Image 1: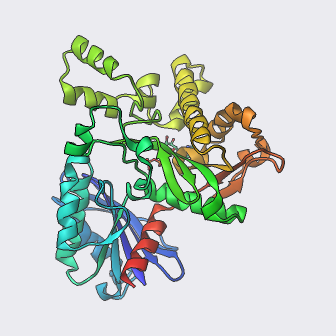
Image 2: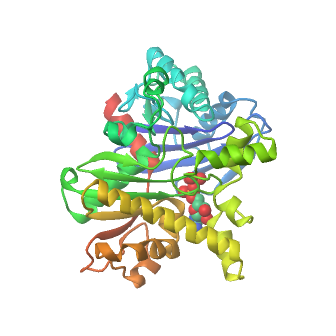
Length: 396
Ligand code: ADP
């Protein structure tokens, strides 16, 4: 089956076509600056990346361009659009309604729309992407894969906020968690790599990218995770603060004359590594600054690693032990320094890192020594493949 995987942001659209039998990527790319001007990049398997600048007033034009590129006579990877068997859409927030992936129907779309309130920056864009595909490929089945779904079976003690209960009853205010597709994929890979049964393993997954979260996966179920109602809670991220005393927000807002949405904008876009270092949200820039002796960048990096370590420690307690700790996403996969620094906190768990392996990992590696008390791994996440698998399973 050929599956088109779509991941829509407010002004962007990432796509891949995956042959679900071989699990090979036939083509992939990104449309950017939708609604501004428009730029698409397209890379067929084994071919050169092409960049096309063309107006994309809405996501519909972006999807149209992607489809044209896929069937282009010279560089296309499909003979006709009939060769697309299904479309898998990443949807950020499924609220309490969606505990697993679903075939998209009008009714499902309505329920997804009802979650817009919970993810006003993300869900509307996902829905626009779905509608654009519906318009251009009305007969192709589509599946929604939710970032929140993997965490949907957390126990109440993990997802309830200690605010008046009526806010949960009236507005569904609770922890939902995100990056679920990645946490699910990586925790399953860990079991495969270690040759252990997934349903009898305690794994802590550290998804460290621009957005970052940790999850505790016990016997194949996510039992806790660091992101909350929104992706703002938890770890220090590229530009997001993660955990903070709400009183500090009121204090800053009063001093600076900010309203709530300005304060939230500061916490989402101007905080995290960018805010602490005053340099960049990108870890490569942070590391370069540290090499040049920048003190704030050093504090930012130490605070980042410390926060990750605190969550891992908490989740080892939550699961009454941990068999494996996995690092994934841009930083987790590529930054050996962060992995090493975080693991320094786990001496009490008997964690020992083989620094030679840690400094030379490929997509996947066990970076702990054979006698380490807990296995520590690097696993490259692959959310697109996970979405393609879910899509195939539901439309077959
Ligand atoms: P997201 O998908 O949340 O936007 P990513 O998973 O791409 O984020 O992670 C982005 C982060 O990963 C950046 O801080 C970047 O510095 C880091 N990163 C990505 N690639 C590399 C690399 N090759 N070496 C070091 N750091 C990297």
